[in-house]
Image (cartoon, rainbow, N blue to C red; front, top):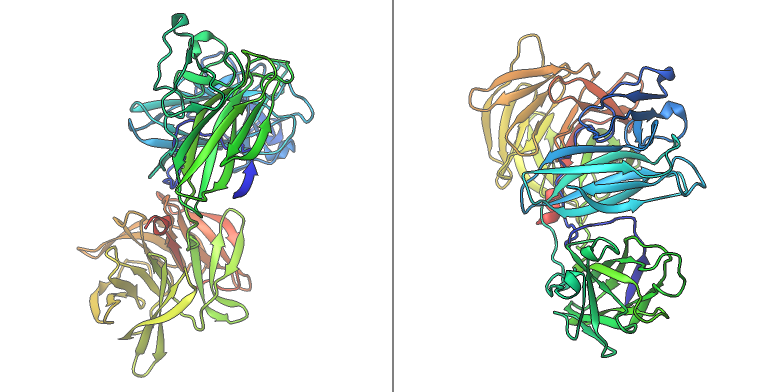
Length: 572
């Protein structure tokens, strides 16, 4: 069953596609925000040097801003044009680990609408061309490549390649992040590297049989190498031509499971430029035609399809259908990977409203990128504290002020089911987080910190928070994403807490009014909530070194506390 057919602008290089990635961007100044634009009323500027980026050419780097009104930056306020006084190439070396897989991505847009020859750029990894991009339409599009590092340093590069007329392709938000668990390619010998080309001085060779691949028409299978100088292989050194002494179909049976979805992808190029009905290729999954391809240009383009397994095995087939014997379409880097089941939990930033209602909501999910606020279903009460662990939200509510009877509740984000966790006796709790071992709710009233056993409700007094010149009537506590640092937020400042000595070290004063919630994202971003009198709550980020606040988005009327649900829950 074919679930979706799509030609993607997501272009992996390696034979594995990604399942999960870390959030640490190895590229410095990937959104070109580090260099302040002071010329031309802040609209654009030429630089001899650009922070963290190099060029082998004697050329100016050109950074533009939203004020130019050519484009809105994809991330931040600035972006790069790859043609200033002429085309130029930018590069940056990043630290990598040999054998590890990385996702290299960037956003690309044309600058000039309707112009084919001026917006061209080329994307490189360690000097190897990943793809030549061209567009005649303005609009950011993300391109992604999955690559295995071979050294401790890797170089990314992006080059302007259009007409040298001062108008070129635009790029923004460049990132390289480590893939934590790449999926397995079910296709064997998908890049046609097992059978080595030895004839014709290593340039091309006909094979009666090709490892893991067969042909229907009893024709020779033809491999070519980069040394033939027709085209560089997209992955490795060799690729397949689907016309030897006649057009043929190459096929392979791969293991699948009925009902599971798979991504089937490959790279396709024409062999002959400006020729109709020569480079034609048809793509099949279990005998069903996915797409008939044709091009009049030489150059690799990735085609990707989401398909469904119907049995314990599935048949992939790539068929040459051109009309000219001996000349046909090129194929390389054929990949089939299992599509991961969608995560049952929405990860990211959550907040609780102690003044909420069924109509207004008690708990919210915040999307800092889109500024969207979503009400979380399944709750029938609220509190002034919230914490999370393994896809569960926890909060404690005092039920009786005289006896201090309280209860810890949970909300399973996968099922939107609320449950009572434990009965406890406590003063009202204003701050909370879950301990690294997941066994206790670490919480504070105002100055005293406790651990509440999530299984029994037993309370352990840990100590009293104190810092000269500050009070603890507002704020929150949260662990860093690696659980090595416990942060304490007050209405005045951000601190780190030494659990051994109970000593607080001030990071800095944040200047946010009524600061109430604190959460740390997987990538280390520090989020806090605050509110001005008479206004809705707001979400800010804090600088890790200075605690300087930056406004991110507006929230509901009140946010009493924040927590962050890690993407790690989706990997369990």
